[in-house]
Length: 336
Ligand code: CP
View 1 (spheres, rainbow, N blue to C red):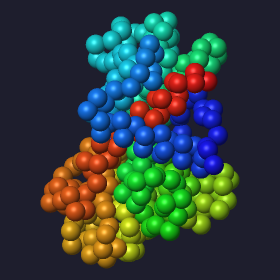
View 2: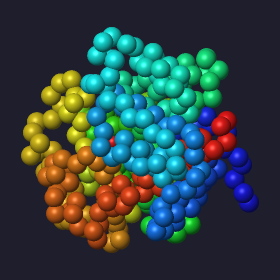
View 3: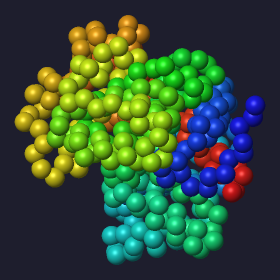
View 4: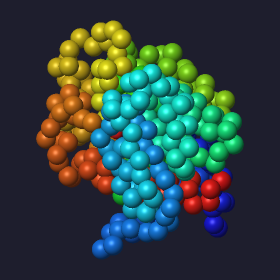
């Protein structure tokens, strides 16, 4: 049965994403992955449209991947760099967004170190009755939807070349590390629990406080009660990764830590760092993910990161282009 038509103008959070929306993204991304395997990797889907990358915070993967995705769809792209922009002369973020609107931008891809900025821009675009779509490319500790969707696509396509959410229904997935500061973890919690997978969070108590777990659990309980049973919390690594099919490890986000939350990086690596030895308790075919950027030797050993038998890190980056093509296409093609 065909999925219903796409109706979302903005993508700010995965908290209210529905299973058919995940499947639409996965299936559209699979068709763009096929396009990207061709000699000519470009389609005219967004010809004449303008995609503006408004990155107020540094990025390598997400910004370049959105730019390449837009170019592969034949859109015109605008890249904004805060340091050389009129922000330095006192212009506000909303006035910056309105400037890009006035130039005919169709989709704004927004990253900011403060949670809520992409939503504020989306609300302003709606208030102005523009048809601009706003994509949250990572806002503070809140969410990073395109990262979670490319993680989902990477895992699903490993299981079956026709990706769908239900492929993860019986899987155990561990998310390890600095979950407190991680927008990637938050978005992945929504998508992976929606798939029916068991999601096990593990980190030191200071980076996974009980209050946070209660927050997540209560959010999930309120939104979709059956999901609460699929989220588990551990203050040590071993129970989280035992028999896991996938282990996602996260960077320690020291730029977001306002106090000393860890004794030392060496001790953190000893307790929560992924190594070949540590993976022995997982399923034999276990795969490791990391959203990047990686601190080699802290959250993951250099040897494991570079081992293609286990590491999906390069595939995640490759998948990112197809998934972001799908997202821009869905947001831009119908001009909702
Ligand atoms: N995963 C991720 O968001 O990486 P960048 O910060 O390089 O975009």
